[in-house]
Image (tube, rainbow, N blue to C red; front, top):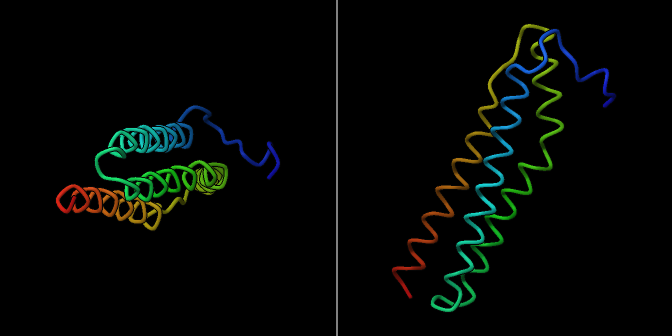
Length: 109
């Protein structure tokens, strides 16, 4: 996607703030993944599964940033931008799944 295609009439508004929000979310997931590694001596190799799950979700967010920004900019230019319900739902399911798996792991071991 060309750089000229990723412009709109009011730089610094919604698409850029949303991009920063998704970046903070990915960073937070990596921090949580790092904290999960502290559990490895107590809960064994199952922690690596949780770590990999959180890292994969963070990587997915990071890798889809450019596409998400382009979609938002085009939506603003057309004055029609539908919400990213699928992306938000997938992130919510991933976080709930990781949290539930961590609780089960701590209860079982």
